[in-house]
Length: 67
Image (cartoon, rainbow, N blue to C red; front, top):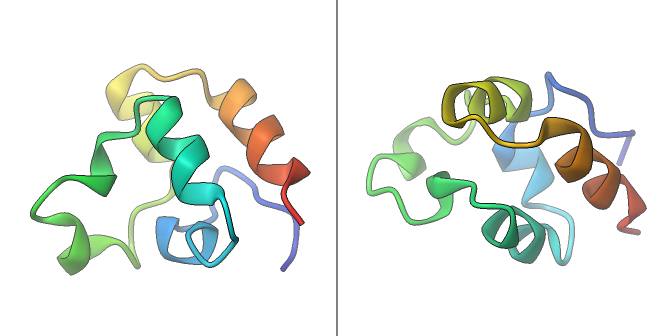
C-alpha cells in the first residue's frame, strides 16, 4: 500500500493490519459508528481528524509505520 495521506480513505487504511487499533487508540469514532459501513469508502482520514479535532499528524505517523 502507498503512503497514507490526508486523502486516504478509512476503507484503505483498515486494510493494513493493526490500523484499527491505532485509530481506536487515537479516538477515531468511525469504528463504532453505525453509519460507517455505508460511508467508509468515502471518509478520508484528514477530514475525519479535522471533524473531530484529532491529532492528524500523530495518527498519520503511527499509521505510516505499519507494514
